[in-house]
Amino acid sequence: MIIHTGQHYDYEMSKIFFETMELKSPKYHLGIGSLSHGAQTGRMIEEIEKILLKEKPEGVVVYGDTNSTLAGALSSVKLKIPVFHIEAGLRSFNRNMPEEINRVLTDHISTLLFAPTKTSVSNLKKEGIKENVFLTGDIMFDTFLIFKDKFEKRSKEILKKFNLKPLNYGVVTIHREENSDDKKRFYSIFEGLKKITLEGIKLIFPAHPRILEFVPKDIEGIEIIKPLSYIDMQALISRASVVLTDSGGLQKEAYFHKVSCVTLREETEWVELKKSGTNIVTGWKSEEILKSFKKIERISKLNFNAGLYGNGDCGQKTAKIIKSFLGER
Image (tube, rainbow, N blue to C red; front, top):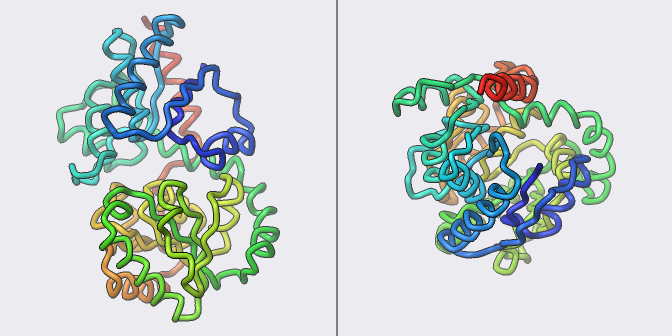
């Protein structure tokens, strides 16, 4: 049974993912949409609780670090239903990030914790969480491998659609509140992107609906487009020379494609990418963004061979552990 809270309410960011990834449609769609953090999380808890009381599940799986994640975990634990957190143990150590609060609280009320990396296991241990922690690898890497052939075939069409040449363009995303709500930071990032285009590289920016209305649309060399489906986005990344993003997931996806990444934040929860040299965490100042871009261009493809996120069997491991846990109850 899938519950869709509606947090990603735009069609391109919701329904199209279920369609292109051939996922089963949610049994429940709450349609809560965009609200303040407190109002959104509160309404989710209220509605999820009603469903849990009706369905009486043996356990609830939550993923990641969104408001939906925390709402699902809180609703479940209050009803004494075991919570299984996939992507547990990530830490940016920046409590100003809503996502950091969500992931910390969710980890501390979860029954089973599925950690994608050794670092995430270590983070949990430092916080006193040692029981029922499992190193499984990253579920996003499973997805990447499953759909790899599809987006490789799609890449030619995508490049033709946006008039791009392989390895001569970059992919940009900006959506975090710290960057999009602070207009000084936001426009400084765009100044940095503009400087990069002067180096002769085109940038494609699938813009989040929340920021589309104030994104500068008249900068030569930066093409603003609507959000893409998972397959199209992966196809776009696969032939890029660089990804510039404040997203957590996109940092990993760039690594999967062996594409260098510049992270437009002061920190990252994916510290192993920074250590590998495939990801430079640069912040929001325009000159630093340009410096990082010039540096990242020289990264060797050999830096991507560390196998940081498992073997593509995270889903199988996770399902087996959950099945065993429920069988013992």
